[in-house]
Amino acid sequence: MKALYILFASSCLVFLLACGGKDNSKFSVEGEEPMYNTDMGDKDMNDAIAHAISTLTSFDSAFAANNKNFTRFALKLKYTEGENSEYLWIGNLIKKDSSYYGTINNEVLYIHSVKEGDNVKVNDLDITDWVYYNKDKAVGGYTTRVIRAAMPEDERKKFDEESGNAYVD
Image (cartoon, rainbow, N blue to C red; front, top):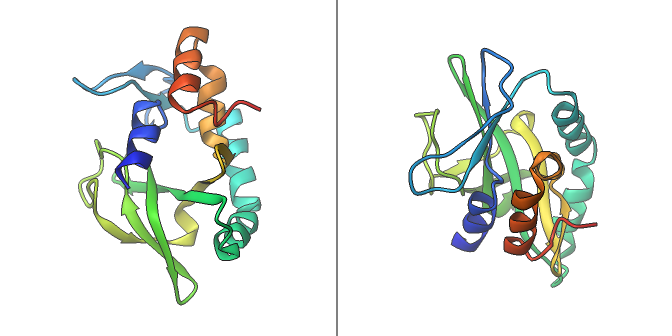
């Protein structure tokens, strides 16, 4: 599901957490769109994660509904190795025996146990966000909304254009 990767990655949806310092900065990998570091104490981001976790049953219900208007389901997981943590979107989801399985849809920068394209089992305790689309509008994506709101106006406009205004309320 390369289209999901392109939407999330090229639209600055990669949310990375680099431990050790309050750095809410943008950075780029050569040839890639900007990504964002944030501090573990970022209240808006932590509130978004808490909200996503508390509303995960909405995602589960939509996934189980088999509604043809609901597409592009993805879960964001936190992966940690040593002092590095990275948040990665998992797409191409299936549910088997009450667990989700899917494919990592982001380029992985700091974690070496997984890479883009790997098939993984979702550990519910690692879920930090969820999203699906109802026709052309994103439902969920709470951490993405925090990142979008913090973007300078020119970047936000570009993001909105590239995402088809999926995150514009």
